[in-house]
Length: 319
Image (cartoon, rainbow, N blue to C red; front, top):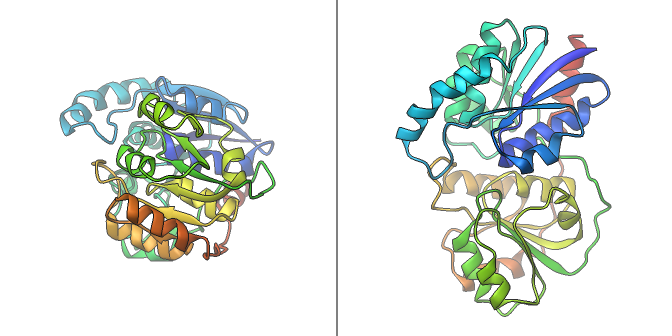
């Protein structure tokens, strides 16, 4: 059985790792490298294989100084977590994936370097840094050939459905791992009762006090059930909107978070919105959110090839 190491680097990157693991499970031995202390990621992927931890050098709100200070530590930890007897290494992206990917290359593993599904106008730093060490730069959209001319397009990575899609009448508002306070505040001012709010690292208590009728939580490893039951999904520029649209066939509203330093920009969000037939909101106001919700009701999600399955099949052929 072929042996594969996959970085599950938090947020949407964990989503890419999960999508690939679902297609490889039972056909390959899997080892996951996750950020130290990331209990949500651990809960997502522990069912598919062994899990080890390596420090993440930088979060989306951290300074470059922290990256420079923490990167050597991450390299040191990676040396003992990447094993020579594995065959394939898959980077799911983010700076967390960089040290173990380079260590894997030095140890002779074939490295697959996955570019983010939200990058269209410029490459992510991790994908750019790892190009020289990669057997293949894995692209999810044809448009990404402009920023990675030597990359190979597989199709978008989305998770397999865990629940049958139904319409339970609520609007799912989510900011991912780090949350999206500007979005939450705008939605909070609307007179909507049918809201399920996932706050991530944003404190949920103010919204619980203002809206006792809402369902509010920080994290739920069983997040698929909330996507499956939503009428509309409202989220930042990330993998959640991919899964909402392509896995569960839900209309989507994309609201980028301007507070994030490391994410793709508004032009990338506009392109992704067109790819998913989603509604794009640039200026975050309650009025704009309400208008977008009304418009989203008429949108039908598209279909695309299964990128995670295509990569899994290629990996298994090397066995």
